[in-house]
Image 1 (cartoon, rainbow, N blue to C red):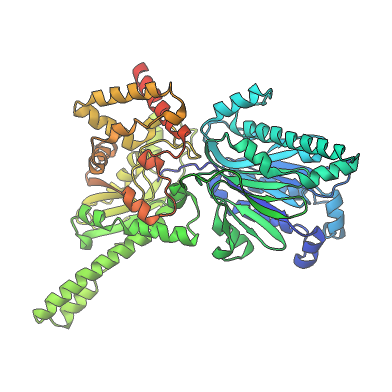
Image 2 (image 1 turned 60 degrees about the vertical axis):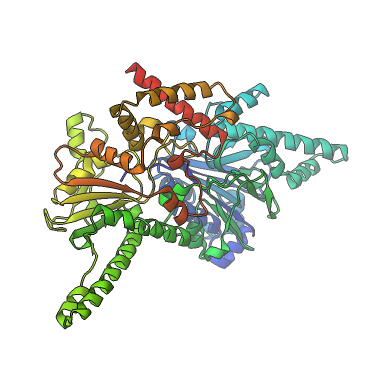
Length: 628
């Protein structure tokens, strides 16, 4: 119901044949450019604030441009970028447009390497200057660098201090600029080292340049730069001389997948995107492993390199619950299982009255979990039917009575529909709230008023804002006896610092419910003690910190917090009884066994930087409360 923003999506294409090959085989030298468009468009869900693309030509002559970049803002950024690129070909004759040799020599974006990015910001910084890829120019091709990433670092301040102490002067205090300068600095050192080596060997002029470009070791560059990074990331880059790389964080927090054959190497944030764009099977697509980099050099040779030692795996479970496309074979199964596992809690909430309950879902991302829920309900109903038929047979029931039992069905309906998007130019409070209540529309007549329960499954309930302002009130118009809101994921209790826009404590309805419970039960000392402990933690090295915010939740069961949420979110005008049912942590791990990253649910942050920031977030919350 509430849109969560994911940091970013990335895409890379490395052509392994000359452009003439693709012109002859596929009828266009734009094969790589077209694949990049599809890889980006298929990941549109991962970034709608802006997008960008960079391109490198391998064989440009001196004086000819060899590195190109195009960026745009807004939800239509991908379309705008590729329209701009193709507009540069509009005046060409048919012969020129189909001449790969001409394109390679004369046309922008007729290159061998492409790198694309889709942006969702979690920093609050906006504008074209903050849209990836970022570009670092130099007269030496090997020292030109473009980078983009799906990432959020928790120790940008430390990295910034380190590189400025080394004498660098980043143009902006922004994580991507800082990473660009750090990688660029290490790339400069690598090139300088090679220059010294080859000049000592007696090489001069272009021979030195070619030797450098043929021997740049990007794995060494990445090892030196990334050892300081704390956070979740997939960092991608291309150099002017034709090196390309992508490196994943050692905890495996952020995801990346790659595919390679004799014609092409591609990388993307999600597996089914590659499957669809290249028409390959899931087993042909490889996952980039934690701490690993994929590198393709100027000559097209690919190698995998372990840049950082893998840590305890904490792959982001929200990728499975919400962000990634549900068309992935494993994610589809996992989301179904998350819905199926909620059956005991759902049945308890409706007092096992399946006959007088209608089941539905909001939003579309919860649809797969809804199918899993229906499967579990069908299993439950079938068990009931068996019991009832056995009893009826023993009692001598006839055909009609048994047919009546067999005809029972789970009642599923499309109850709620996303109708409009609230326009933010309406600022006046009452008008805005009234419009917010109409974001969703309902299907009238979809249940029996005052008789039926209504169960609605969602993928996550984070802030509760949409529930309070719109969902509960609009569903109550159907006059259900009881409304049960089901979350296929557990209670979100802690901020995320690895790429999701959940950074402050007070935005979480679970946190507000726990604070309210502590206050109403006279346990304010718990709040004060946690504040004191968190404040004291900030004086320690981040490696020595512990998450004391867990103590806010410790006195209460999940059910107590959910019940308090209902009190906070249920509008006074609503007549139906309301209950919120959440997935358990154990249920999540059972459904997604290979994605153990659950810090937003459990508070178990995989990196020291995350622990540091959650303590600071609670201190900020308390000090803001004190000022009010």
